[in-house]
Amino acid sequence: MPLVWFALAWLAGIAAGSNLPLQGWQWGLLGGVSVLLAALFQRVRRDRWSFALCAALSLGACRFHLSEPRIHPGHIAFYNDLRQQLTITGVVVEDPKVFDGYVELTLAAERVRSTPLALARPVEGRALVRASLDHHWAYGDWVRAEGYLETPEHGEDFSYRDYLARRRIFSMMPVAHVRLLGQGNGNPLLRAIYGMRQRLLGTLYNLFPDPEASLLAGILLGIETGITPEVRDDFDRTGTTHIIAISGFNLTLIAGLFIHLFRRWLGNLRGLVPAAFGVVLYALLVGADAAVMRAAIMTLLVL
Image (cartoon, rainbow, N blue to C red; front, side, top):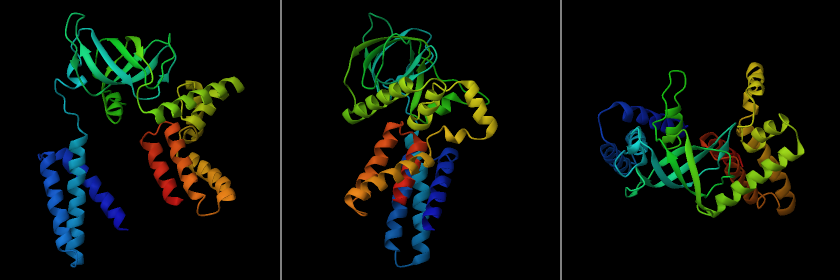
């Protein structure tokens, strides 16, 4: 039960941080003082919990401020909407998403240049780049992208800007000419996992026709880009869209399979370790977004 109150205090802190005129360091200081007072009054149950909840609220507000981007000349978003062609050099840090007619690359920007004769400036931050399908892009590719850098749109019904902001992306290049400079960058483990993901996707398309292959790719691998609007509308009408998305249901089945296999070979207790490891690997395989990680954490707690 205390976990529920701490979670509510943390959420209240996020709301307070977004509405009250206090800076992140002030919230952090308040949270630190609250933790100290909770430790000093640990024998007094009522005061201890009050200070602990105050600490959770303050640290939630501090976390909100830390998550906000600091746009400065060293951040790629500083160069949004300049109405001039830019050249970005960076590394692909997520598994590319293939759509009809283009592929989306998430770049960790390293350098930006405004003209061919200008000096390249070192930058940080992520940018979403839409490239052509003339090359098989992969995680870890070192690329150079040329195009116009824009701020993502903020629509009335759906805010693409907020959606990308949750992925720490504040810039996008809707049309880009991308050139490969090198390969093999990034985390070796993620590179191996994403490579296996692409091989499994190719196997599905070799074994099954569309739309069955695209549907299985969404259910098993979390790759929904191949699902046609007609199929998606059918799931919407029947209220079964949750089947496509990777959720706790998928991870529960995976965990149950791993537990059944490893307990058989290693016993009840020792079989839990490789089963938990398998759940983590599957979460990384399907993309490891926020919803998947929440489901993975809850599955691990059940184990």
